[in-house]
Amino acid sequence: MEIAVIGSNGQLGNDIYETLKREKKWDIIGLTHSDVDVSDIDSVFSVFKELKPNIIINTAAFHNVPLCEKEKEKAFSVNSQGAQNLADISNKLKATLIHFSTDYVFDGKKRAPYIETDAPNPLNVYAKSKLEGENRIREVAEKYYILRVAGLYGKYPSRVKGYNFVGLMLKLAKERDEIRVVADEFTTPTYTKEIAEQVRVIIEKEPPYDIYHATAEGECSWYEFAKTIFEIADVRTNLKKAEPGEFATEVNRPKYSVLENFNFKKENLNVFKHWREELEDYLQEVKII
Ligand SMILES: NC(=O)c1ccc[n+]([C@@H]2O[C@H](COP(=O)([O-])OP(=O)(O)OC[C@H]3O[C@@H](n4cnc5c(N)ncnc54)[C@H](OP(=O)(O)O)[C@@H]3O)[C@@H](O)[C@H]2O)c1
Image (tube, rainbow, N blue to C red; front, side, top):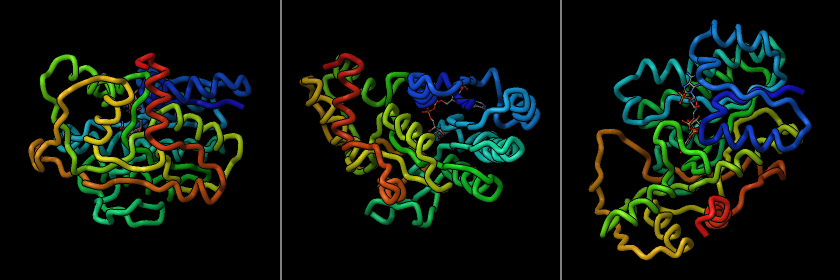
């Protein structure tokens, strides 16, 4: 069986590529942006008609949230049209599409973990374009899994930011006398290696085609996440809660975007651990502890 991983040099794509390759069961083809542009139907069709994979895994996205507000057309082109292009080619090849979406499809007003059947209400352009991508896949693709993920960190940096939150906090601890972090935004930080493991399980077990929430267990504010990073890494620093609105930007973001992996649990296939445990695994893997 052949599996193509789009965005294989990205934060999540790298871990998925490595995890699947390690199994030595399948042929894994890694594709970067220079190999295929998901927003360009000609590029998608010419690459995949040649490769003919059985599974297409799409980690590609335009996910610089502030830039999406300014470049709305590009956001929809990559995140929505790109998803549709991949749904179209997947149908042609009778392939399964595994696609990634975001906790930001919700507005945060529920103040309790969101399950897959809760109604989305995206607050910004990025989230709107990702939700439209989900909808296109649900309408078009015959065989698909959409995984909503959140607060990613992994040993490979995000292609957009060049770092992850954990690395940023440890860097700031060396550079600054005081670190201020928002305490009124809640999410569940998730280690990309665990998501890669969940993808492996999907491929092995073939649960029903659907949307799945795919985040670590539990929830925390960004402040609590930072505090825990410093605790586990045994770094002494002057960490303070930012005042509400202190880092105000023009982009609306949900204050609460915690996801419950209801569908994976229903299938008895949820692999995720508590976010603190995943953080410990990560800090060990990158030799911080
Ligand atoms: N990061 C988070 O905290 C977070 C949270 C929720 C959801 N997500 C979702 O998780 C997924 C993976 O995110 P990530 O953090 O791994 O992102 P990442 O590190 O930025 O990787 C994205 C990859 O997609 C490629 N790409 C971008 N535009 C493309 C296009 N038009 N055609 C083909 N490839 C393209 C990028 O290549 P270039 O860099 O060369 O363009 C890069 O290899 C995305 O769907 C994102 O929306 C992420």
